[in-house]
Length: 441
Image (cartoon, rainbow, N blue to C red; front, top):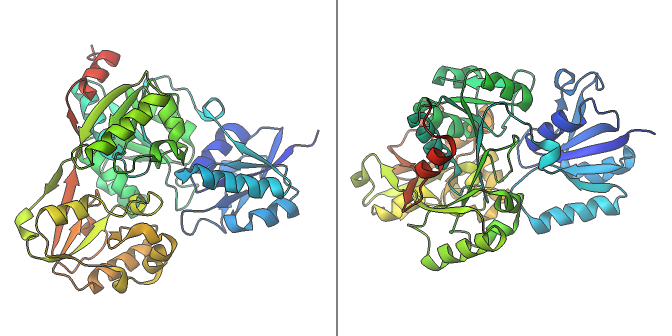
């Protein structure tokens, strides 16, 4: 029989992983194209032959998702695989209907077909939505495991926006490694806090090679999930973070609901700033579909270098980009800090936005009067820099997890906002991780 002609819909992450672990070298399938969305400047490129394998000597072309129907017909496609994350269930089914009407089958790939098994224990930290507090939860888990005596590597969900061959396996131990790999702001936001805590970070494109290399130097693998995707590795402990600021989203987004149903532990975060009735609503929603999971309540308290510097100032608030864009949050920790510490005004950055930042606001109109720290490549970093410096404000409040001044030149006074996970009550993460793994002997 002829191989099943396949398109993989993605965003330069899960799509490449599914190809690598299931389709590459599989004689029953021929992947004729990827389509791309969410991430700028991915479409129009090629998944390179060096990564695609001998079946694909010319590599595999990557097209804009808007070309999907045309590609199904012109390339005589039998099957379309949906492989990106943090989208409403209704959105997924609209895509499915589009594919079915064009004549192809529509497929979602599950854990059995896409998860790799590690020779070392794996702790996975995932979330129901982008911006739930996964990053600080992952940092907290890494510190506890180190306190128990284990050497840990964080393997981050992929963000390969540059030369894919060079990015096949990336290892980060110092800030110099971030510069060497020409990391975007989005990558730095995830990697730098781990490096500050003395935790090695791996990322890239080929997650089996990444895993096998990491296994050689650590005791426990920490899967640091992205968006609300489920892990690439079979977890021995599956931790999922939920956000009571967005009640109802825990069962309304793909594949966040997959995480909910598979979780061993829920971290119900931000209970200090959410409405009590929303905390209860999310807890009951999670319990209804996964009553066997352990529940932990947690806060993400804010830390500001000089809170007094904010009082009475007209401020520009810069927040983590993905949280505001496809995470659909209209505010974040920086906005909370501005209000809490007495800013006179939170200035709307949209009148000062230029080029790709302006386009981001058009694409994600729910972002609101705060600035997403978009930095997918050098050009967009320059646009972010110009937008900040054009803003008519007294002070910049930066709530991205990195020091923005390391990558762009900010001509305004700046205050950083940091946040860490703080569990409330028992059991806490130390209890759970100690019971699961014990102290290293």
